[in-house]
Amino acid sequence: MIDAGPIGNFGRFINHQDTPNAEAQSVVIDKNLAVKKGVIDEEDIEVIKDIDFLEVMGLYVLEDIHPGQEIFTDYGTGYWAEKKHFKVRQESFYMHSKSLDDLVVKNEDLKSEVDGLKRQVKFLEEKFNWLKKVLQVEFEKIAKRGLK
Image (tube, rainbow, N blue to C red; front, side, top):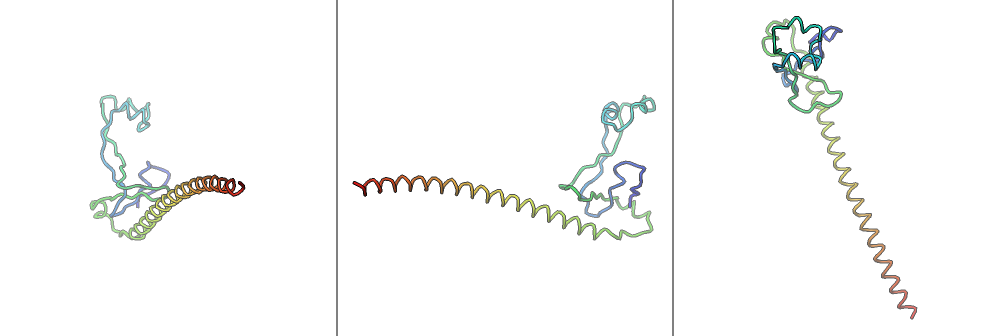
Protein backbone atom coordinates (compact mmCIF):
# COMPACT_ATOMS: atom_id res chain seq x y z
CA MET A 1 0.00 0.00 0.00
CA ILE A 2 1.21 3.50 -0.76
CA ASP A 3 1.96 5.49 2.41
CA ALA A 4 -0.79 8.11 2.57
CA GLY A 5 1.02 10.14 5.23
CA PRO A 6 1.36 13.91 5.09
CA ILE A 7 4.36 13.85 2.75
CA GLY A 8 4.04 13.23 -0.99
CA ASN A 9 1.76 14.05 -3.87
CA PHE A 10 -1.78 12.96 -4.76
CA GLY A 11 -0.43 9.54 -5.82
CA ARG A 12 -0.07 8.51 -2.19
CA PHE A 13 -3.84 7.97 -2.07
CA ILE A 14 -3.92 5.56 -5.02
CA ASN A 15 -3.92 1.87 -4.13
CA HIS A 16 -3.16 -1.22 -6.20
CA GLN A 17 -5.79 -3.21 -8.07
CA ASP A 18 -5.32 -5.91 -10.71
CA THR A 19 -8.34 -4.39 -12.44
CA PRO A 20 -7.49 -0.65 -12.12
CA ASN A 21 -9.80 2.25 -12.92
CA ALA A 22 -6.88 4.60 -13.67
CA GLU A 23 -3.35 4.43 -15.02
CA ALA A 24 -0.28 6.60 -14.80
CA GLN A 25 1.47 7.61 -18.01
CA SER A 26 4.60 9.58 -18.64
CA VAL A 27 3.92 13.03 -20.11
CA VAL A 28 6.48 15.55 -21.41
CA ILE A 29 5.57 19.21 -20.82
CA ASP A 30 7.25 22.57 -21.32
CA LYS A 31 8.91 23.78 -18.09
CA ASN A 32 7.11 27.13 -18.32
CA LEU A 33 3.78 25.32 -18.49
CA ALA A 34 4.86 23.26 -15.48
CA VAL A 35 5.39 26.48 -13.52
CA LYS A 36 2.10 27.95 -14.76
CA LYS A 37 0.18 24.81 -13.74
CA GLY A 38 1.92 24.59 -10.36
CA VAL A 39 3.80 21.36 -11.11
CA ILE A 40 7.01 23.10 -10.02
CA ASP A 41 7.54 26.30 -8.04
CA GLU A 42 8.78 29.36 -9.89
CA GLU A 43 11.78 29.67 -7.57
CA ASP A 44 12.88 26.13 -8.55
CA ILE A 45 13.11 27.02 -12.24
CA GLU A 46 16.75 28.12 -11.73
CA VAL A 47 17.66 24.53 -10.87
CA ILE A 48 16.40 23.36 -14.25
CA LYS A 49 17.44 26.40 -16.31
CA ASP A 50 19.20 24.26 -18.94
CA ILE A 51 16.18 22.01 -19.45
CA ASP A 52 13.28 23.04 -21.71
CA PHE A 53 10.94 20.13 -21.05
CA LEU A 54 10.04 18.01 -18.02
CA GLU A 55 8.80 14.46 -17.83
CA VAL A 56 5.94 14.15 -15.34
CA MET A 57 3.38 11.48 -14.54
CA GLY A 58 -0.20 12.01 -15.68
CA LEU A 59 -3.10 10.06 -14.20
CA TYR A 60 -5.67 8.93 -16.75
CA VAL A 61 -8.97 7.26 -15.91
CA LEU A 62 -9.95 4.02 -17.61
CA GLU A 63 -13.61 4.28 -16.62
CA ASP A 64 -15.90 6.80 -14.96
CA ILE A 65 -14.88 7.48 -11.36
CA HIS A 66 -17.65 8.79 -9.15
CA PRO A 67 -17.44 10.89 -5.95
CA GLY A 68 -16.42 8.68 -3.04
CA GLN A 69 -15.08 5.93 -5.29
CA GLU A 70 -11.52 4.83 -4.64
CA ILE A 71 -8.89 5.26 -7.36
CA PHE A 72 -6.84 2.17 -8.22
CA THR A 73 -3.89 1.61 -10.51
CA ASP A 74 -1.88 -1.51 -11.24
CA TYR A 75 1.52 -1.15 -9.58
CA GLY A 76 2.95 -3.75 -11.97
CA THR A 77 4.67 -7.07 -11.37
CA GLY A 78 7.99 -5.47 -10.49
CA TYR A 79 6.49 -3.81 -7.44
CA TRP A 80 5.04 -7.06 -6.09
CA ALA A 81 8.18 -9.06 -6.87
CA GLU A 82 10.06 -6.90 -4.35
CA LYS A 83 7.39 -7.14 -1.64
CA LYS A 84 7.18 -9.89 0.93
CA HIS A 85 3.54 -9.21 1.82
CA PHE A 86 0.53 -10.34 -0.18
CA LYS A 87 -2.16 -8.40 -1.98
CA VAL A 88 -4.68 -9.03 0.80
CA ARG A 89 -7.52 -6.55 0.56
CA GLN A 90 -7.67 -6.36 -3.21
CA GLU A 91 -10.75 -8.57 -3.70
CA SER A 92 -12.84 -6.72 -1.13
CA PHE A 93 -11.86 -3.38 -2.69
CA TYR A 94 -12.78 -4.69 -6.12
CA MET A 95 -16.14 -5.93 -4.85
CA HIS A 96 -16.81 -2.60 -3.10
CA SER A 97 -15.82 -0.67 -6.20
CA LYS A 98 -18.04 -2.81 -8.44
CA SER A 99 -20.96 -2.54 -5.99
CA LEU A 100 -20.59 1.23 -5.95
CA ASP A 101 -20.43 1.29 -9.76
CA ASP A 102 -23.58 -0.85 -9.94
CA LEU A 103 -25.40 1.48 -7.53
CA VAL A 104 -24.36 4.55 -9.50
CA VAL A 105 -25.54 2.97 -12.76
CA LYS A 106 -28.85 1.92 -11.16
CA ASN A 107 -29.27 5.43 -9.74
CA GLU A 108 -28.66 6.97 -13.17
CA ASP A 109 -31.10 4.50 -14.74
CA LEU A 110 -33.74 5.37 -12.14
CA LYS A 111 -33.21 9.10 -12.66
CA SER A 112 -33.62 8.59 -16.39
CA GLU A 113 -36.76 6.52 -15.84
CA VAL A 114 -38.21 9.17 -13.49
CA ASP A 115 -37.46 11.89 -16.06
CA GLY A 116 -39.30 9.83 -18.69
CA LEU A 117 -42.28 9.34 -16.38
CA LYS A 118 -42.37 13.07 -15.62
CA ARG A 119 -42.50 13.80 -19.36
CA GLN A 120 -45.34 11.28 -19.76
CA VAL A 121 -47.28 12.83 -16.88
CA LYS A 122 -46.86 16.31 -18.36
CA PHE A 123 -48.03 15.07 -21.77
CA LEU A 124 -51.06 13.32 -20.22
CA GLU A 125 -51.94 16.42 -18.18
CA GLU A 126 -51.84 18.56 -21.33
CA LYS A 127 -53.94 15.98 -23.19
CA PHE A 128 -56.42 15.83 -20.27
CA ASN A 129 -56.74 19.64 -20.19
CA TRP A 130 -57.29 19.73 -23.96
CA LEU A 131 -59.95 17.01 -23.79
CA LYS A 132 -61.59 18.80 -20.86
CA LYS A 133 -61.88 22.00 -22.97
CA VAL A 134 -63.25 20.05 -25.95
CA LEU A 135 -65.86 18.37 -23.73
CA GLN A 136 -66.84 21.69 -22.16
CA VAL A 137 -67.43 23.15 -25.63
CA GLU A 138 -69.47 20.08 -26.66
CA PHE A 139 -71.55 20.17 -23.43
CA GLU A 140 -72.24 23.87 -24.00
CA LYS A 141 -73.44 23.09 -27.54
CA ILE A 142 -75.71 20.30 -26.23
CA ALA A 143 -77.02 22.52 -23.45
CA LYS A 144 -77.84 25.33 -25.94
CA ARG A 145 -79.71 22.90 -28.24
CA GLY A 146 -81.63 21.44 -25.34
CA LEU A 147 -82.83 24.87 -24.21
CA LYS A 148 -84.29 25.83 -27.62
